[in-house]
Image (cartoon, rainbow over all chains, first blue to last red; front, side):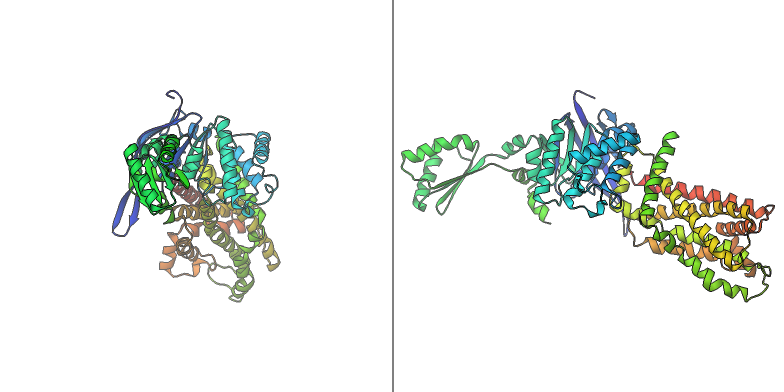
Length: 327
Length: 254
């Protein structure tokens, strides 16, 4: 392992051959990606449906064989040392993979046994996660009877049962109610606090923004940008500040004042409101208010909004991630 | 090797638990051969002596064929349970653990074989009041033959399930294969009744050798060369189809 890199990929590619009428067709799902995931971080892999997120995760978990490129996971070579990777990585797929006919407890114990624990240890590990994820009220029932949130907790526990150093989570909060989502976010943060590195695939911007230390945005099989959520957002450009005034005339005056006083990226007045697009809006705001004061321009309301990851996605792809979600 | 045994045992237990959660299906899938026993076998008794059925030996000829029928039809549709496991992500979850790949499939076909043996014993017990007299040693040995036949069919079923991953094409595919191989195995009526061209066609069907071997075992004719023939063919077939099923499983992660 070079330094503290937990995942390192170079030009990782996956091509599927799909049979269609009129012969075979090659579909490039992942078109050569370079990733570095550092020890102890939550790495977010953000992109719309069909971008290649799950395919990448399946390659990293040894479930799919890459068509090209190379990768090291926990220092093990993806092509040569699959056994070691399987033993040391935890993986939660989008489907989850709990055996619905069996009880949650049976699922957990079998999973620990499959990772090589003896029966006693397997039961101990199962009990540990039942307590940790507060599952004791339902763990003895068949998993088919669980709510979405309960099943997700079981899925994550199954992925963590052997205490891996790296956990791969594929869209862990898809389809969950807000409460279960918030609960899962807390648990993911706790895992990070315990030193587990987390590779998290998601199509939700708020999730990537709240949880992740580093984000790579993937679209159409390619990584389009990587950085911390803060970096990505500040690259997009400035904040948006909306000032509301008592009349349109005041608003026009304010616009003139602002244009003279500071370097603005873009400004526009709409009825009684002035929309100002500006870098570092938060720190500029007090100064701007003082200058309105000097000119006796009465401000009725202020709204400051920082750029979201959606704006980042929009900047690099020309599409909104939200549009893709709706499709 | 130790790990393979351990993993196979874990997978066998998991699948057996699945079966035992609704044990009634063990009996439901015995329905077809039992119907033949109750509603069809009496017709044969009325025929008197015909080629392949010595007088007074109808039951002894009919039951081994019926048990092979159970092995063919009872095991042919196990692939549906695997599709369920593929859909819910259970198989993918197993594949990212260090569990040995062959164990995932072995645990299933061994469960299927055990269920089949239970069914064959029950069907045979039901047949005793119909006047079945059987060589016990031969019968016990024939159970191994049915188990191997079951493993062959189950492996085939799992192989197709892993290729299709959805139910719709699975049933027609399995029916298309199971019906001709069972008709050409002389299960219900001995092939001695068939015209020559049909007998020749049946020689190309590996399961007809299993039926011949089972009938020889029931009669206690241990010298009969058909027994060795039947076992050899069915062992080779079981291994080939298991390896094919395994390849389909490994293709899931390619």
